[in-house]
Length: 104
Image (spheres, rainbow, N blue to C red):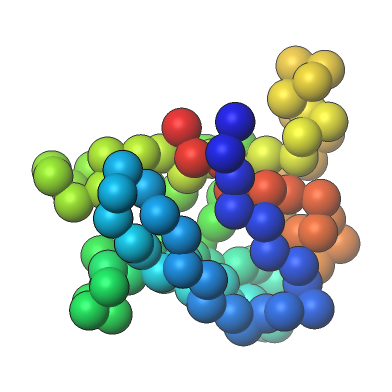
């Protein structure tokens, strides 16, 4: 399964990735006050397509935009996927490096 991996030491960061033959930019930012991360999804022209707070085990793109990005981005710890249960309730500074953003 394909995933986007970010390290907390890189934040804030932008990474370009390809999905279905198109390039997209994923930007991750950290909010110190609330101890949470946000995802900004941009197209090649740097226009924001989607922005959201990353929530563990929830599709980051919970409202689909037709013909723009047809994948889901699911934040999971790969161990949770292997054992079939959830070991985290949220994504924060204490567990961010364990989480991968899976493209499904």
